[in-house]
Structure formats: C-alpha cells, structure tokens
Length: 214
Length: 322
Image (cartoon, rainbow over the protein chains, first blue to last red):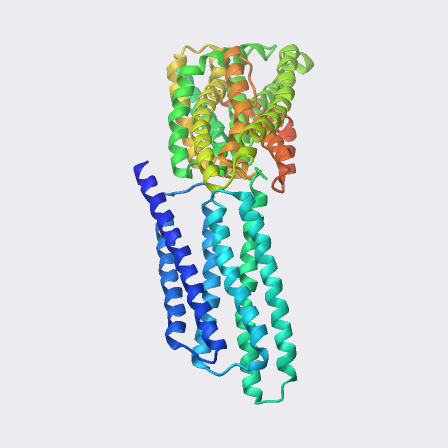
C-alpha cells in the first residue's frame, strides 16, 4: 500500500513539473514571437522553446515508466490522465516545430501584417496558458474547468480569424514568392498550436461531461 | 471394493463438475471490470474464498437439490449422468466465455433423466416450480435493486463530487467496500454452487463425509476459476463500463440475495442476477452495454433443453458402464 502511495505522489510531482515546463515553453515562445514581430529573430529564445520541449519529453517518458512499473498507481482515471499528458505533449511538439522552423528560416516579417500576426500569436500562447489552467482546475473544480474550455474555444476562433485576415493580405502581396510561402507556412504552424490546444480542451470537456457528477 | 470403486468415480465426477462450475463463476467480474484488482490478484482471492465458502456454507443447499427433485428412485447411474451432463455443458459454455447458471444446468439434466425414466411423473414438478419462481424473480430483483441503488449513490454521493481528486478519493473508498462485498459474494456463491455439485451424491447416500467432499469440490472449483474462468470474468466484467462505485451498486443485490438464498436453502442463479444487475446499472447510468448480449440470453434459454438432452444421451452408456 505504501508503494502505491509513493508511486502516486511521484506521478503527481512529475505531472506538476510537466505542466509548469509547458507553461515555461509557452512564455518563452511568446517572448520569441514578440521580438520576431519587432524584426529580430532571437535564436536563444527559440532554443529555449526547443529545450523546454525536450525537458517535457523527458518528463513524459519518466511519467510513462513510473506508470507501467509492476504495480498500478491509479487504477481509476489512469488512462484519462495519461491521455491528457500525451495531448499536452503534442502542444509542446507543435511549439517546438514552430521554433525550429523559424530558427532555420529566419526572415523579417512584413510590417503590413504585424497586427494580425500579433493577434494570432497572442491568441495561441494565451490558449496554451488557459489549457494548463484548465488541466490544473479539472482536479478540483469541474465547473471552472468547463468554463475555461469555452475560453480556449474562443481563443482558437480569434486565432483563426487573425490567420485568415493575415493570409488574405499576404496573398495579395506581390513580393518574393519564397518569402510569401515561408510566411504562410509560419502562420499555419503557429495556428496549429491554437488548433491542437482546442482539441485538447475538447477532450477535457468530454471528460468532464463523462464523469457522472455532471 | 465395489463401494470404493463407486466412491472414486463419484469423487472424480464431483471434481470435474466443480471444476466446470468454477470455470463459469463470474463473481469477480466487477472487480476486473472496475480495474480494482488485476486478473492475477483476483484469481488468488477467488481461490481462497471458493475453498472457504464450499467448506463452511455448502451444507445447507446440498440436501435440497439432492433429495427433492426426482420423483423416481435415484440410482448411481442417474446421479453420474446428471453430474457429467452438467459439467459438460458448463465447460463448453465457459470455453466460449459465456456465463450460465449451474443450477439451471443441473435442473435441466435432472428433468431430462426424470422424463427418460418416469415420463411426466419422473420429476417433482412442485419443487421445480417453487424454484422456478426464484429463478425468474432473482434477475428481476437484481435489475431493480441495482437500478435503485445506483440512483441513490448518484444522488447522495456521486453528484456531489467535483474534480478528479474527489472522484479518486471516493472511488478508493468504494473499491474497499466492493472488495469486501465481492469476497462475501464469492464466499456464499462457492457455498451455493459447490453444494449443487455434491448435492446429488449426498442424496444417494454413498457414505462419503460431506465435509471432505465439499473441501475437494472447493479446491476443484478454484482450479476451474483459475484455468477457464478468466474468459467468463473478462466477458461479464466488460458488459458495461464500471468504476468501483458503479460495480458496488451492481454487487449489493447479488451479495444480499445470494447470501439469504443460501441460508434458506434456495438454489439461486448468481450468474443471471449479476448479468441482470449490470444491465440495470447500464440502464440507470444511460450507459451503453456491450454488443452480443443476445448470445448470453440464448445460452440461458438453451441451458435447460441442452442439459436435458445431454443427460438423455449419456444415461444408457453410463448405466451400461456402471
């Protein structure tokens, strides 16, 4: 019984660390995007996003290893918690992918689309922040977590609007096709963060609805 | 020498039939379905309670089944035919993972022999009808009580929970209670079912100590659970999605009704009650049940005629051998 309790505490600790690191990665990404909008590509900040993702990967592996040791720690909810962790890990992967893309293709953003890009970036990083809040809140307050899922949905809609407003302007530009292409890819990759965050929040909403107290 | 020979044959047959009963025992299914215990852990627990139940509770029902059902002279070959027919049908259905009622299979075999030997007068119909009322009532009670129990648990406990942490805490408490209820059920079921295996031997009065017979059948019953019973446990445990709290709601009626049934000497079907309980639970939660439940219903309906036909087919070869 003591072993199970130790294992449960260990899992809780890893989970907390994982969520904190995801928030950290999102904050670094936000900073990197802000400087990108101002015309600078900070490789240090982009490396920070990549390192944060690596750390999250290590924590995820540690979590999985603890989970599949000889004894089960959390017979109830174990699968749901594992799925939540894996989905947030995909959010981390998408942030890392974006950082790597910008790192290998650094370019200056068109000033005409700065506002839309800023709105898109803000919505994306804010949605990651809200997602982590939602995951923390689902442990103690279903109603609060349920409300946050709608906030995330709103942020995704905002990001989508900003994305298409931006693309509309971008495709009308008569400039170097490679730069237009790279910008459109960049926009798509950053939008995917918000999109996947919303997928994860939908999953969380499904869990809240599934639990019989709803 | 002849008596020893008969005793040995009866013992072997008792071992085979209790193995068949154990193979079809699904008491632990909800522990598996709610992931409270792993298959290995629950098989160990099943073994312990099978032996305890058989030896401590088995005496009550054996006499009812053995003495009251046949209106003809009960010979050794009749007893053997009934036991073998029942065990064949139990083992066949267990191999397909389908839960059937041991009591129904035994009664089906008795009816077959009764018809063969005495026509319509070979079976004590009044006793069969008396039992039949309970066979119909017990799944109905199981369904209704589980439905009501779940609604109460939901209203007073589950609906007040908020967040995963409170769920985990509450489910943990339910898992402890569930464990206790299932151990109790396994204990009383082993008493009920093992007594059916030895009941007819007791009825014939060949002079074997009932306690020894019950101990042997208890051990064999446990082997049946371990070797073949796991597929039945898996099948029943996944009829609907279970948590410790919902599994608890479905086990209560079975535990209570079986315990009092055993004490009162009423041979009830735990399998029918459990399956009905799980369906009642799914209905109360508006949750889906798994596909293919019709196979269980078909095998329930087929148990009487098939057990009867097997006993009719086996009687003459066994009588010639004996």
